[in-house]
Each structure stands twice: as C-alpha cells, then as structure tokens.
Length: 375
Image (cartoon, rainbow, N blue to C red; front, side, top):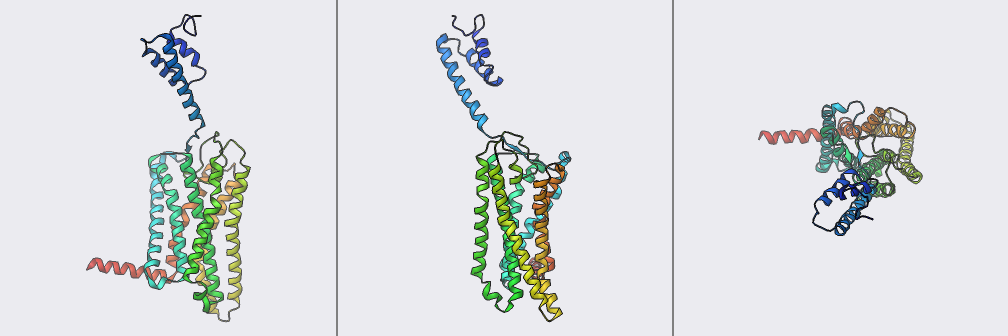
C-alpha cells in the first residue's frame, strides 16, 4: 500500500476525495490549503496534522448543526419593498404611545389632587402600556427601518417573555380598575379607607408577580425544543403562538401550558371585570336620582373604552392564531400590530378626553410651562 489513501492521486486530491462526503466544500478547501502549506514534512507527520485539523473541523460542524438557526421576522406581507415608508406611521405610533403614557405618569405623580386610587391605577396602566411598547419597539423598527429581520433564539424568547408579561399586567390592572369603580359606586363613603395607598401598592405588586410566575415556564419549555422546521415568524416581534409551531418535536405540553396561562390570566380577569360591572349596573339602577345614575356611569366610561380597546384586538388575535391557520398572512400581521400598538396609543387619549381631572391637570401643567418659558 502506498503512502496516500488513493493510489495515483496527489496528497491534496486524495485528502479531498476521502473527506468529500463528510465536510462542506469550504472546509475541504481549508484542508487542501493546509496540505499545500506543509511540503517539508514527512508523509506521516503531514497525515497527523491533517487528521487533527479534520477532527477540529468535524467538531465545528457538529456544533453548528446543534445551534438553533436565527428566526426571520416578517413585516407587512405584500409590502416588503415599502418598509421605509411603513416606518413613518409605525414611528409616529410609538412616539405617541411613549409620550402619551409618560405624560400620564408624570401628571399623576406631580399633581397632588390626582393622588387618589383611580389615578394610581391609571398610572399603573400607563406603565404596563409603556412596557408593551418598549418590548416590541426594537424589532419593529429594525424590520421596517433597516430591513434587519434576523433574531436569535435567546433574544426572541426574551422579547416574548416581556411582551406577554406586560400584556398580562395590563389585563390585571384593567381588572383592578374595575374593582376601583365598583368600590367607588357601591360604597363611596368608605372608598378612601378601603383602597388605601398600601393596599393599592400590594395589588400592583401582586399583579406583577402573578405575570412573571405564570409566563416564566413558556420560554423555558420552548428553549429545550429543537427548531429544525421553517424559521419564519408571522410578525415583526416574537409571540408564543407564533413560536410554538416551529419546533420539530412534540409541543403538546407547551400548548397546554399556553392555554393555562391564557385562561388563568385573561380569562379570569375578563370574568371579574364582567362581574364587577354587573354589580355596578345593579347598584346604579338602585339609585333614586337620575343625575346620580348618569354621574356614576360617566365615571366608568373611560374604563369601559379601555377594556374594549384592549380585549377586542386580543380576542381577535387569539382567534386568528387558534382557528385561522389558513388565513391570509396579512390578517395575522394586521391583528398583531393592532393588538400591541393601538391600545398604548389610544388609552392616554381616552383618559385625557373623558376624564375632567386629567384634562384640567394637563391644561394647568402646560399653561405653567408656557408662562415659565415667556418669563
């Protein structure tokens, strides 16, 4: 037997021939260059060097194959070539959402007359809306502004965690606001003694802890699954219903866990909101004065609008994910964008227009600012 694996071939050609089935082309060429660079070594020494390098390359190939591929985020289907134009309305909506909610928080914190339970809950709602907006902002702008659509698995799971966590907090705060309206109408004389600042703080902490606890298993369960199917997402951000269809393994546990999260948070919150308004309507109908009934219902109008703005798109998106597998990708994209972009924009507007105290505080704040600038 000759010194080379294949008789009649050069050392480089023999090495190339024997490794073609196992290595990618560029790695084979790397080995070929290595063989050409070592002409002074004996055949046995050169074979040891090449075999050692082949082991390293094969190890790299195995590591690459075990790493999950990056996900490809989607913009608006059919409008991919107009991403720079679409960035204008998206940037405008994010600017309005962030500015509006920051103003609401600032006004509630700085105006002493708004240090009441209703407005503390409103500031909590603004914080959660701000969290949802900031969670989706980086990837949405990267897709529409820079056409950067790739996102790694860990980054995607982190974004998914924060989006769903703040969404669950949002739902919990809406239920707490319904409870606030019930106490204010059912027992107005003890309203301040029941909803004290410490109790409101404990309710806010409980809402945050509940959100973190129920959502934490979802990214952990997804992280252990192999992703070897199509890595294309349906949105410009990562959502659990979107990610759960990509693994090439059994996702029954993930699906059941996601359903439990939905029922134990959004389901219970919406049920408690409904029951709160049943009691509110019953209390209002028992009032003797027509003006009193109208005033009581008027205090609930802003909250009812916020509930509708939040839950209608959320239910629509859930129905599309659950039953609209064959629906147009455009419908999926539009529903997700409406669900996570519209409520943070509209809620500050709703409360600024429908709540007299917020309007007065905003007008006083801006008038004082204008006078200070004139001076």
